[in-house]
Each structure stands twice: as C-alpha cells, then as structure tokens.
Amino acid sequence: MTTGATSPLTSLAGSHLLSIADLDRDQILAIVESAIAIKKNQPTDAPLAGRSAALIFEKPSLRTRVSFEVGLFRLGAQGVYLDHSTSPIGKRESVEDLAGYLQRTVHAIIARVNSHAVVKSLASVSGIPVINALCDLEHPCQALADLVTIREHVGRLGGVRLAYVGDGNNVCHSLMLAGAIVGMHVTVVTPEGRGPRSEFVNAARRYAEESGVQIVVTSDLGAIENHDVVYTDTWESMGEPELTPEKARAFEPYRVTPAMMSKAGTGAVFMHCMPAHRGEEVDAAVIDGPTSVVYDQAENRLYAQNALMLALMGPRTGISEE
Image (cartoon, rainbow, N blue to C red; front, side, top):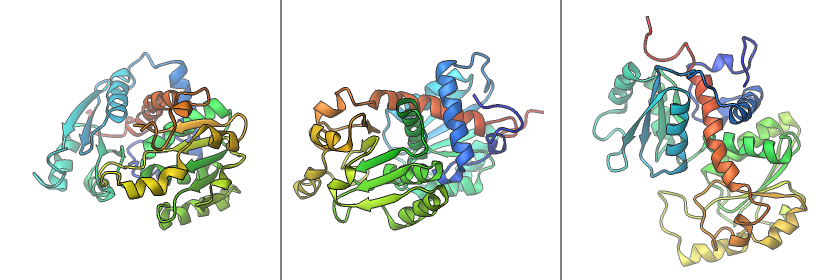
C-alpha cells in the first residue's frame, strides 16, 4: 500500500469524503493502488487498533455494511452499527447533537443516508471524518471499488472507455466524476428524461477537459460500441417509487443483453454495483456469464474502503490519545 511522507494520501488524515470529487487524481490513484496491495497482503499489525467508527444507516444494506464492518475488524478497529431506518437522522435529536456526541467517542462517522444534505450537515459540525456510504446524489465508495476492479481486469485506468447504461442515478454521478478525474472516457446511455443531473455532467466535463477525455451523455444505444466496460445499475433506486409498467417499458431497450455486450466489443467486461434484478436491467446470461466481474467488484468494496479508512482515520484524527 502507499505509505511515506510523500504519499498523496498523507494529507487526507482527518478529512471527509462526501463526494468522489473531494479526492484529486493522485489521491484516487493512490487509494486504488493501496486497495490492490491490501487485497494481496492484508495488514497483520492492526493499524487502526483502538479506533472505532459509527455506522449510521438510514437505508438497508448488505455489501456496504458487511464490507465496512469486516474491514474495520481486519484493521483492528471497531464498528458500531446505528440503525436509523425507522428514525431519520435529525428527528430524534439534532444532527448537531448527534455529531457532537459521536466525535467525543468514535474516530469516524460512516453514513448511508437518504439525503446528501444529511452528510453535509454531519461534516459541517463534526471534527472527525465523515464518509458518505451512499446518499441520493453520490456513492463515492462504490466508485473507488469500481476503479479497483477496472484496474484489475482492464490493466489500467487512463484511456479506458466505460459505458454506463440505464438510470442516471447516484452511482452514475460518482462514476462520471471518478472516470473524468483519473482519465477515463465515460459514455452514459439512458432513456430520455432519465439522464444524470446536469450539475454532475458539467462537473465531470470540466474534469474531463483537464484529463483530455470525453464525457458523453446520450439516449442512443449505438454509442455503446467500442468500450472496455459496460456498467449498469437497478432501474429502481432505493427510496424511489416501485418500478411501474410505464417506466419498465421506457427502460426495456436499455437492458444489458449478450447482444449489447457484443456490440461493446471483444473483451468488454460487465459490471453492476448490485443488488441486481435479472431480467430487468440485465439478462442472467450476462451477469452470470464469463464477461461478468460483479463479484470481484463487490469484494473490492472491502479493500477500497480499507484503503480509504487507513487514509482518513490516521493518527491526526479523532478523540485525544494523550
């Protein structure tokens, strides 16, 4: 993993991660390489021994909760799960009081919440790192794991061509930003009216201009040709109304099928952040087929988040140790 005084990760101790854009190119690449190193050689010296993190979850979770709790355990730290699924943050007590107490007792707050405003509020009053573990606008931890997976299976990040097909949601937002920052071409293909939010497209294009790559947003399925990665997500994000027949008909042409994978090109890999709905956004023949790397992708959440927590929960963070 990346270490030393000159590491791009050194300056991250005590920082928040609310958006993938809170990290610059060198920091993202360093986290990716650190994650790959951790995957090869899990630390045995409990580098976060004596530390703890509060996991505040308003949304249900499988991969996020397991990967953070197991990751903290492997690093020698303790995760404290706080179920807010029936009591939204700020309802029982104010965000200020919640963060004020937690910063006296734990070393980080990991928040999986309904609204980006909540993680912003937590960060604004917290003296310890706040990690956005998913909100309505972004999913930065997923994007880091995605980059680790692409680095493993494609062999590089710079110049990679990624096609995201489906709903322009929080995962799409973080992928566009992350790809543009590290120098990946990103093509987003969605039904009319379901594209990513304009502020994220504009921000990604600004980063892309600096990196010399392109961000394309279109409804044309023909744009998927000649890509290294095809990525999709559920058409029914958590917190949204159930998938209606009308919405399903609009999305139907955007299901990832073997024919679509063939159009992307020989060697293209398939990615999905899961949970997946076979027969909706992806055919079973694709997600269960030889081009799929979805389980590697899910596993890499553990290593990407370990690398992130090592960077953020460094010796300058948290309660006094004097």
